[in-house]
Length: 214
Image 1 (cartoon, rainbow, N blue to C red):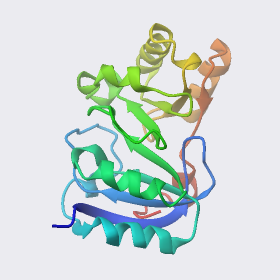
Image 2 (image 1 turned 180 degrees about the vertical axis):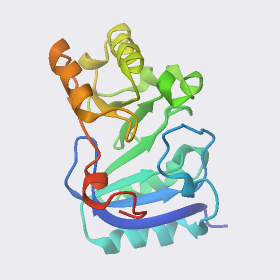
Image 3 (image 1 turned 60 degrees about the vertical axis):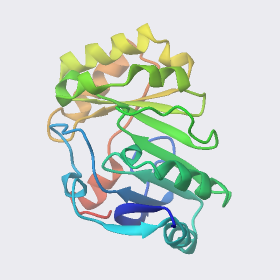
Image 4 (image 1 turned 135 degrees about the horizontal axis):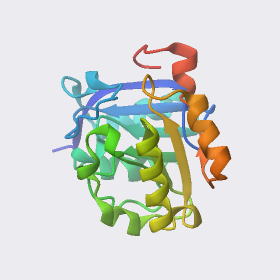
């Protein structure tokens, strides 16, 4: 039997975050997530979707005709066949990234995949779900993202960075939680403390607001 995944949507847009921000990117959004972050902007992906064979997903991505592809969710690693999908996409010589909450193990992922691990801050309400052994699997091309709701989250994130030497091991991203923390306030803290992080805001929110599939 062909391997299948439950898919919420596959769409072409601009990457709104991370190192490849601004590049035309195919997004493969999987259905389902075991977390319930209070600022989640993809609740529609918790349920529904449609089952698709891996062959069909790979062909849909290939037809889009761009180099970058991001597998996201929901939480993509909640579906075991995601690992095979990532390898299949890498076999197309695409630039493949995985956006994951960090609550599930990333051990054994295809090393060609760039992992973007979203460590959950206290303000998310899900920091107890962080799977800390994931940090041992970081590679220089990977990225760790902190979505920050307030100054307490900022201090917590800075402490985690220092404790695990993250800035020396991979790229670190600080992002204000949309609707919770003014972007300029977080930017001022990063500049004040001279943090070795990439400050980012969600480009897609600026361009298209809350419109799904963008």
